[in-house]
Length: 83
Image (cartoon, rainbow, N blue to C red):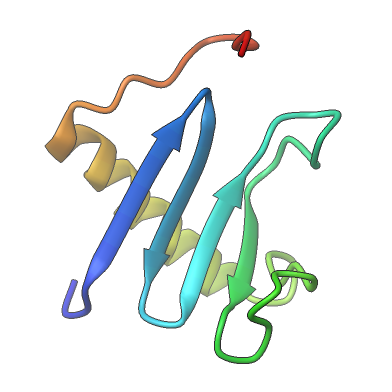
């Protein structure tokens, strides 16, 4: 990977950060229910989803997230999580 990375999953929500970039997935209806991509250096409040404009970066971080899931035994729930 070359850069420090961190991933998390809590109550079905997911995030992965590598360098200035962050992937985020939050279920509907709270958010889109799709992966969103942010450049935290330019957008620290995560207001501008760059997933459509940066498809290569999105794919790169999704691959890194999938490897993180495998390496750490992350269990992703199949449906909504009550909390």
